[in-house]
Image 1 (cartoon, one colour):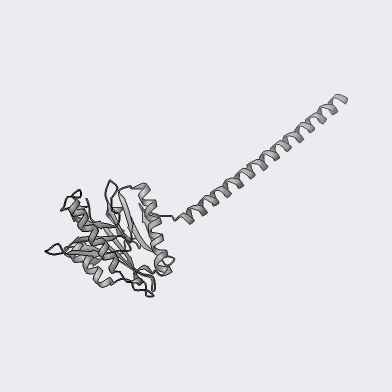
Image 2: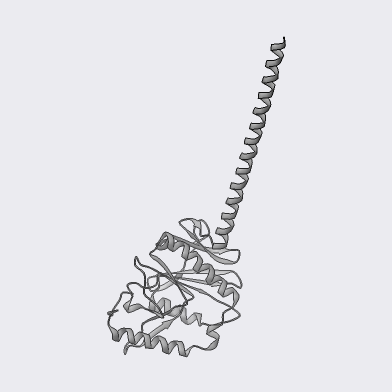
Length: 248
């Protein structure tokens, strides 16, 4: 969705800030409760996109941020909060309390939601309609941790269609050079064909590399010591041989 309002207009800013505060006050307490599976998946997503952002700074991921957008006449607003969403833009996005589409340079390219059977904080059917019919988000990734069910929807014309896995068995999002699939029960991401490592995995890889380097150094030291010992033994033998020849 292209911007339709001046982001510097104080009236526009005030309008969206007021709507943001009203929305926040309307939330029930259960909205602020989160199951461990839900929290873990969002952590995996954020850490993955931090790594991706380092390689592609234009790929920006947001967490639990309210999206506000025009919805019909009389300045009525649509409002929805994805678990995560991604935009592609070469400059940093200024969105503090809410992402207001008319005054942002770009709209969401991908929204991600993780359905918890233990704590249903959102109406996912309603959200689906908002992403498809109103925001027209190009991609929507939906994950059910219980049941290991992952679906990627892509906007085709005026509606979503389910994306089929590629030859690698993963769901591809070409614009992000990204693929998604389940790994060990969680949604993981592949960037430019390689699995995006998480911080814990990077630490283990670093530690393993350090152990390999230490082992190689120890082996080299041992080999050097053996070579020195062999040289010393050879020198001793040469010396003894020389003495024997002299006596003869």
